[in-house]
Image 1 (cartoon, helix red, strand yellow):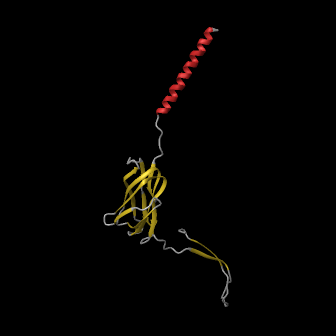
Image 2: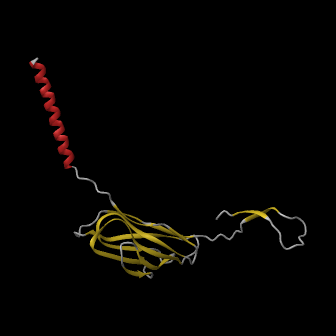
Image 3: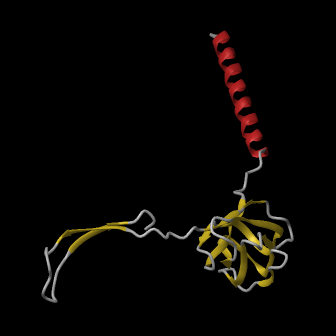
Length: 196
């Protein structure tokens, strides 16, 4: 019986040691924080049309500064205007000659969560079918301790649509036939268009 007790004690001691080592290793592994993302949506517009798209900053903790540049092909698209998102006022410098818009934001109190950094009004100045990358470059993204915030960037694409000049396919389904000699007439019709 003594042999069984000694073997059981050794097994129990071994399991206890393994559990302590496992807990210690788990405590040493740093928690992986969700990565922040800076992104701009894809956009489409007819020639000469202006559309507005947001630049988003998501998954941030204690955000204090953001310095973001948007580059684009100035022969395809230009920035007409930039307005603040829900972070607050931003400083903006639009240089359509160079094809770059610089935007900067600061707050002494940190912001945590998902935010619209800015709304950018993009005007299609090129020809139908042309595209331009909407290239975001994050110059600075820091927290209240001036520490860089790890992030990824998701660029967008701006495309100028080709206008639909084909008339819709319509067909009268029912109604009066022959010559109509009165003013109040009812027709039933159907129509289809591959664009709408």
